[in-house]
Length: 387
Image (cartoon, rainbow, N blue to C red):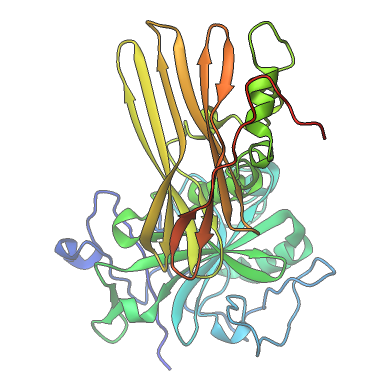
């Protein structure tokens, strides 16, 4: 059986290997290794006596396992098409290997969770992996790399970047060209299951694999919670609490208890992604306008079904006017179990803050849209319910 090798993108300016620039994609040959600007490509052509399988068990090490019932198993020994190698030419070097299942081509990456663990693979680290080794003969140390990772697997996030074979054109014996509309999917091994964390088109391939995957790790750690918004917003009497506690002259405003800084959360260029199930996810799209005395930010939650946007809703908005010292902000909370979104508009001035009625929407995964429920009515200003 011939070995299928693939690459996402090599030249950051959109060029392609083997002079296929016009196609906006890349061809990989059997001689390809983990390349400098490639997010995922073949890491070699195999190792003698077969590869060592990586497989997380409760003991925290990688062992062999029965994969018959797994939908995704990028660690299957039989599917590996290379030994463990390091990405080459990037600022952050990552251990990786390539594989091929019945439906996908993929590369598995091991990303250290600490700076010490990540720098261990740097060829310039005199106390790291390459101490006493020849980094020009990487193939000789594949088994050593595997043994090291086996012993410290709890210190690594394990990612896979995969391409469905239906999006690959068979050009010649061992050269393959992704379709111009090819979509790559990024998975993270989480509690023994491969969870999709991101996807991108061949035209949008990240320039640096390591930084791209580290951003996903950080995003899932902190932002996976922050992007849900603050749960206080979902309280039945949240608006009443704001109107009661944030009035002029009071010092116990409930808004001071919010744990999410929405403005800071959406100040980053890269918007978060929230998975709802295998087919549905929430994307976030930001619009920003800044003038001499005003600033206006809008963030929409987009419901994506199999990578196609079917509906949208305004979840966050911020507007400020320096001339009249006023501002308003819409904040939100998302419950992924109930599939609900709460939003509330807050108005700020020099005297205090007030809140409109909280609006509630359901994310309808059957009809692939947002459905608005009845708004939670406010009590008269200054009246707070007991309990």
